[in-house]
Image 1: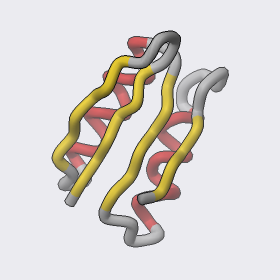
Image 2: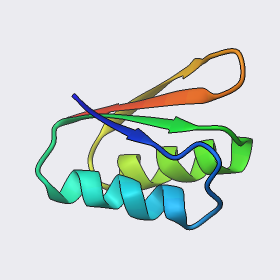
Image 3: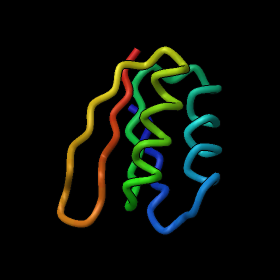
Length: 68
């Protein structure tokens, strides 16, 4: 599983880093985000790229998981 930590970054950086992970052919991606907007954007991007997504809400961030 590829982990992408985008906490503290503002859009469009979380999407750009997520896209970079998908371009490596990774089937399982875990993206850490710390805002609601970044979470929604990453979910939308991954689903449009063919991933099934789930979200785990941690204490001060979200873990968006994408699986092909």
